[in-house]
Structure formats: structure tokens, C-alpha cells
Image (cartoon, rainbow, N blue to C red):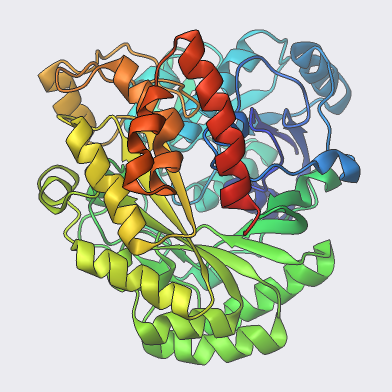
Length: 503
């Protein structure tokens, strides 16, 4: 069989999504011919996450064009049609961003993929859509005229079974995890159990990606990296995350699962050597969910047998002095920590995050003292949020002395408890468009205006990196009048040099 994977990426540079790499591995094990249509290197309308980050002082500018990473001006629909005409796929599949299902980015890519397929001639190819959006809105997706099959939850076993049956002209309407549309009828199959032994999965397969995809920026340098995972499933239940609802789909099953040390080492070594990789981005929802005893064993082995730097995401309350030391020994150079909101009471009541500010400050301190760069994730525009609450977040970042602070507008995407709250309170409407690259808040709040939120967004990192006596001046740069815009540009240049010259 011929399978065309589609990656409708609007981002500024390449990524190697774990889901796509796994889909390719599964399909090739089934002797399928697999190709990828990737829009990453095509110019597209709208602002990118990178451009927003640079505007808000989040990212250090890196010129990837020296490695040939540039965007082409093309007609994307024409390119896709040409790809289909030449390759003649039997199956077109898309929206595998991550095997642990991500949020609004996956949601947006799902819609972009469907939009592309609506405008081209697919001949007799079936279309298969998996990921977060069909998991939480299966009726919406399956009823689209261009969609033949959707997958709810993990896709690996179901996708393999699907291509086996298609290849052998067998009935495909009874495959677990799949909803199949045939002859005007929709066959809704039950979920299969979660894959408990992750070692049974094939190694991630990255040869489908353009070689330019591996080049990515890291703190002003260009590295050659891939995306990787050693576990699946988060044991926490943050209200802004879809994980709790995904977990509810699998009652009485172990949701957090980890690869064995042997498997982690073998796969990482294989990928490093096959694709000439010198950097890894781990996508585990909390890398330090791993027991300290396992990390004690893994860290020296990974350093000796793999020996390349990596970045991780961790929960503040999972960081101990010893775990931080082991992370550094293993090769970790940077860790991202979810701060989200700096007010303990708000965090506990509305976000279901029960760590204390002391734990956040202490955990970040353990990482910094071990020589690991720290990066905080923060949200503004949360339900019921005020200017005072936002400055609690700014204050906590300052007290924790993070090396880099990232900020984004809260987005109430489908499958989260906070979305239900936002709908109930009238902060959003069901039909509102969500996007990972919004330049303003998705919510209409009566506690703070969109104008004020926009002003704080563009100055947030300035506040984090300045003494309080400068706050009055920075506040003048929040506005949209000509004076404020000129002042913002001048301050942005000053703070860019201050923040990034030392990093």
C-alpha cells in the first residue's frame, strides 16, 4: 500500500513530531510505501509562534538560512495535488502530532489538514485522521465529507490493522479505536486498551522528513535534533489540559507508562547514529515522573552510551536536589517548568495545581545549582484574572530567578475543564476560533480588558527582567499610541541585549 502522511505545519521551522515518526515506523513495518507532504518550508499567511516569541523577547534570533532552511513561495494546494498525482496514495493520513495528544496546535493542524484535502482531488484515496480533535469531537470530524476514518486515542495498533485489512481487501468497519464511514453509515468501534509495554513499539522513523527539518535553534546556536519520548501519560489533572479527560477514557488502566532503560538507550543510540543527531528534545509531559532509582541507573548509562545534550519539561514538585544532579549528569542542558500563575490560591482553585511557590522556587534553584538552564511557562488571560494576579506571576518568576520566561495567552481548547467554565461564564462562545498563535486573548473578561492584556503580553518579559522602579516606564510601553510604540521598540532593543547577550 501507498500511504501519504500530511504535516500541515505553519511553524517557523521544522519539527519531527513523534506521532508522524511513529506512524511512518508502523507503516513501514507493514511494508507500506510512505511519503510525507510537509508544509513547513512553504510560505504561509499569518504570524508564526517564532515571530510572536521574538516580538515578546521570548526567543533569541537565529538565522537558519545558513543551513539552507528557508521558506519557498509556492501554491500549497497545487503542490499537494502534484504530490497526490505522482504518488497515487491508497491512504492519506494526518494530524499525528504527538503520541500523548497535545492541545491547541494539534487542533489547529487538524483543521488545516481537512481544509487542504477539501480543495484537492484525492482520487480513490481514503483519508484517516487521528489525534486530539477527533478524540474529543469525533462527530464533528467524521461528518466532514473528506474524512473516511478517524482514530480515537492511541493509533499505532489500529493503523497497523487498518492497512493490513485494506491490503487484503478485508472488512475495515470493525477495528477498535476507529470510526469508519462506509456507504452512508458510520461504524463506531469501542476503544482498545492502552499500550502498556512501550518497548513493543518500533523505533521512531525520521527518514520521511526533509533533512532541513533536523536543524533547529537552541540559545543562539544551531543544533541538529529530533523529538523523542521515554514515557506516555501524565498522572496530574490540570484543568487547562486535556489529559484528565483522556485518562477518563481508560478507567482501571495504567495511564502513565515508561520505556525500559534498555529500550531508551538502544533507540537513542540508533537515532543518533542513523540521523547524525547531536541534540534531543524530550516531549514527556513530566520527565521527572520517573522514579529516582531508575534515573540513578539511566543517567550514567545515557551519558556514556548516547552522550548528547537534551532538553526536558518537568513539574516543579517533582524536582529534588538529587534528581537535578542526575539530570545534569545524564546530559540535560535546559528544563522547562510550568509556573502558569504565580498566585498559590488561584493555581489551586482554578488550575488544580497544588504546588506551593516555595516548591517552585526551590525546584528551579535545584536545577540552576546543577548547571541546568531554566525556562518557565506562564499564562495570562486566565478566567477571572486581574492585573494584580498577573503581577503575582511576574513576581514569582523574579523570585525564582529563571533564566528565561515564556508567556502565552490561555487558550480554552476542547477536552478541558476550564473550557466548560469559560463557556458557562460567557468568556467565550462555542463557535470561537482557537489558535496557538493568537495575538490577543480568546476570552472576554470583566476583570481586565483585552487592551490591557495585550499591553502586558508584550511587556511581560521586560517586567520579569527589570527592577520594580522601572515598572512605571515599562507600563507606558504597554499602549498602542505612537509614543508607546516607539518606547516599546526602544525598550525591546535594550532588554533583548540584556536578556540574550548573557544567555
